[in-house]
Image (cartoon, rainbow, N blue to C red):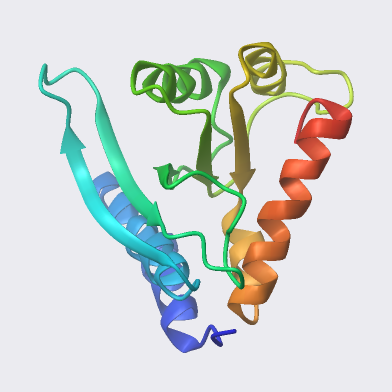
Amino acid sequence: MAAIDQVAAQAIAVGLNATSVNEKGKALENLICFYFEQVPGISITQRNVLNAFDTEEVDVALWNDGAADGLATLPNVILVESKNWSHPVGSIEVAWFLTKLANRGLDFGILVARDGITGNAAELTAAHAVIAAALKDRRRLIVITTDELQALADTDQLTRLIKTKLCELAVKGTI
C-alpha cells in the first residue's frame, strides 16, 4: 500500500485552474500516471501515442505485472482515456474509446472523466447505454471521476475502487 499525498491534490488543482484545454488534459494525465504508478505491479509504458495510421490516440497505456497486492486479475495491457472536461463525457466519446479497445483486441479499459459520463445508470441512457452494450462483446469499461480520485488515501483504495466498479458493471450492467 502506497500513500497518496499532496502531489495528487496539487495535480487536481492545476487541472481545475488551467486555462487551456491542453494544460487541463496534461494535468489529468499526470495525475492518472501518478496514481497508477503507486499500484504494485503497474508501470506507465506509453503516453499520448498515435497508432500507425494516425487515426487513434492512446492517452495512457499501463503495463500490469499482476502483482497479488495490485490488479492481479486484470489484463497485462490497460488503456486509460483521460477527459478533463467541465461537463460529462458523452456517448460518442465513450463509444470511440471502446472502439480503440476493440481495434487493439483489448477487453478492458478505464475512462477517467472529471465529471463522469452522460445519462442515467439505472435507466441505461446515453453513455451508460454504450458501456452496457459493450458487455455483449466481452468488453468492460469503467469510469473514474476526479472526485473519486481525490477521495483516495492509498493505492489499496484505488484497487478496491476498480474492483468494486468491475463488480457493479458485471452485476448491474453499468457503472
